[in-house]
Amino acid sequence: MSKIISMHYEQGVLKLIDQRKLPGEFVYFECRTYREVEFAIKDMVVRGAPAIGATAAYGAILAARQFMQECAGDRKSFLRKMEKALDFLNCSRPTAVNLMWAVKKMKDCLAENRDASDDTLMAAVEQLAHDIFNEDRDLCISMGKHGNTLVPEGAVILTHCNTGALAAAGPGTALAVIREAHNTGKKIQVYADETRPRMQGGRLTAWELMQEGIPSKLIVDSTAATLIRDGKIDLILVGADRIASNGDAANKIGTFMLSVLAKTYNVPFYVVAPVTTIDFEMEKGDEIEIEERDASEITHINGIQTAPEGMEVYNPAFDVTPQENITAIVTDRGIIFPPFNEGIAQLKESVQ
Ligand code: MRU
Image 1 (cartoon, rainbow, N blue to C red):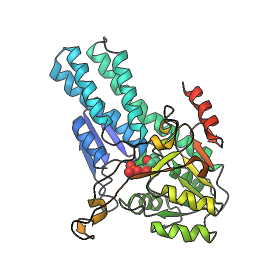
Image 2: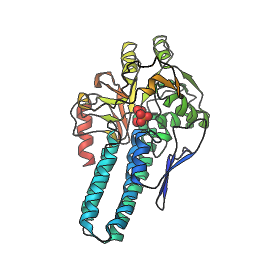
Image 3: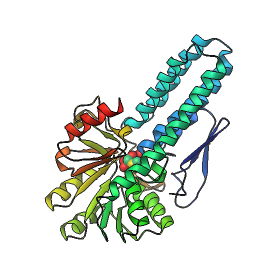
Image 4: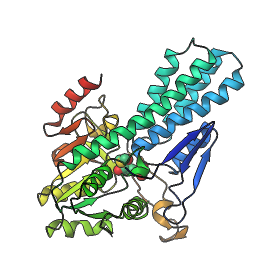
């Protein structure tokens, strides 16, 4: 089990490991209001699909505490303000569906407890946030175990972005599989893509891999093609921010390119994600909203300008890997093989 815990909530304070500062500094970013939580998600203090879902759930506690005081017994006004605050949190980043999933759960919880006493309602909101966090930890552990069945002894694994404990409540998604394979003594080796422009691989995955003592090497994103072509990679493990009902999967920009290489050179390409990352309402990946982030992420490195002043930039944070490029989807409930629409439809029935 990973020793890294991405967040901690206690008595009106949500402490998040400030992922913007890693690996140089290990500091916490403290949120006391839901607006600070929205900032933390938007500015990527916290990132990774399951982690932002759990963070938003804790943000709902902070909003509820604030509005309980402000509304002093006026339940209608409390619920109105909560609705607005939850919508605000919902919009902090558009691609990872775990955020919308957590916000919807909170809205349902408020609706169920709309006539309850203040204490009961507050307790229900707090309990739900903790449940979302704890459930995600368990889902990570299950994904690790299921995914490990696909990892051969001595495998060389390529991964992209950060899918570890920093991105979730437990050991992560794709990185949970890597952890499990390592912990069960499979003598694996990992290549971690740097993951431009935010360097989640170079800063965060590298940090997690080193903490665990997992044999690994960091590569620039463009090295992956040569490694794959030369037969140096046995399998690719990535996470997802949203999976459509047909299996198309949005993940960090660059994932699609890896999937094309994997298909060309016959390397298994696995997407690892909890059921909370599946958008059962969405038919295909082309409906997924892809976040575009600030130009400065590309024109500047650590505050130093690296592109000419005024240069235009295109900076999508994610891309969509078409289902036909995916070998299997590892979920907390088991592994889904093509045709994904059938496996996902069965999963939908089992979670409802
Ligand atoms: O922009 P980020 O860092 O939030 O993107 C994260 C990813 O793309 C991860 O691969 C994804 O959330 C799945 S891992 C938990």
